[in-house]
Length: 285
Image (cartoon, rainbow, N blue to C red; front, side, top):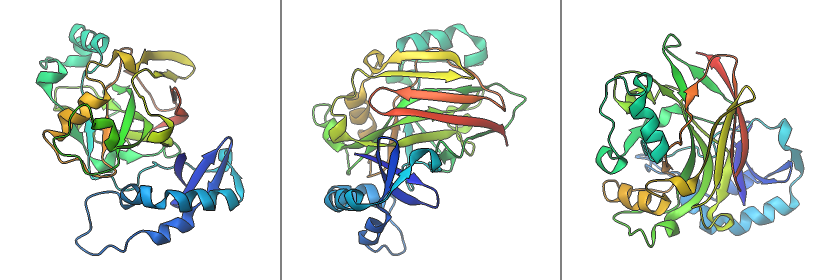
């Protein structure tokens, strides 16, 4: 199943070139009261609502996908966890280029650990990226994004994939400079998820997916998730040994070599095999 959020926070099932509106299912979410939970209520309830979503989708009017404004598939992730330098060639690329490392020590991911991005940085493909500090280099980074489906703490590598709700394309936009990663990667709109959430049953093995990004028609990044240093199960196990992962939490798995700058007026076209393609416009803030 491909689930999207579109237009005025509506929920849809994507089928071919159409979206089937299943927003009515949101009325079945459990009522929440202050203090509100620190997780995404839809993702937490997705296993229970799956049958009703499928029923509504069968009877819903088809809306052309091209006519929909696609938002982030997730409305309320509790946290966005990101993996730095998790492709070997990207690690080498960053170490060799002072414009990328700015004198910072670049360690292997096992030493560098993971980092957090602000949830306020999250947008969908139709909202686009709005560059801040345009006097500095801003780069694209395409990544496989993993969405956690249920509470995960100290999980094993062997069981890790059973905690996944689904997958998206992720763009981790980065301002180059000497500051900490989280600071440079957390401005508004610097995390793009989309174009929809592909549920884990449709993508049971994320270990060998082609991923790419073009900017203005120019090929930039080309790789495969088989080149990850820590693969998806290992990343979930690593992250859950430090954090409690909750439904809707996002794990950005790292970007391959070929990162490059983006400018206002650019359009990024990102693709991940078995997920889809999203086009994201770049503007000035």
